[in-house]
Image (tube, rainbow, N blue to C red; front, side, top):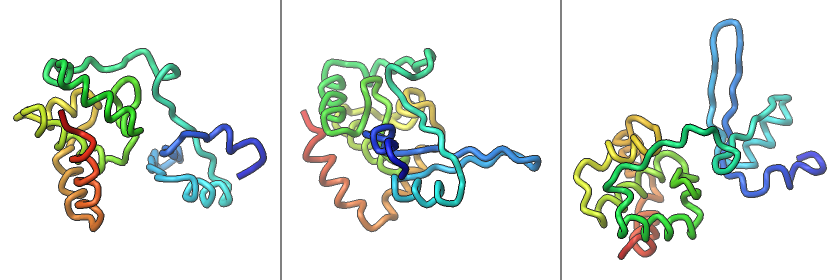
Length: 152
């Protein structure tokens, strides 16, 4: 990275690259600073999308089952671990966020888990994200970590 950019990207774990071309728009999720460095060396500029105080005003409303007293305890644990921000938005990849949602729903006894988390996180197809996660080799490692941290 160029001088001074390390501070600019401090604490940033994911990037979104958007290419606008005559044929359409290409959006690519960039997982880490190493990938960001490669893209920048190719002359591709990245825009950092931050959530939190700098986010747009339209923060989604939290469904009631994810805003109970026990849920707030779990959200605080997830935030302390660096998995979600202050607005309960995930700071993890989509598959890992789905694993986290699955664990939280299990602890809280939420049956319609995908609907609740999709509403809060403004996502769709979280079941597919979960299926992707469980097909990955490191899935058990993350499940154990979430099980240890996300409990009442």
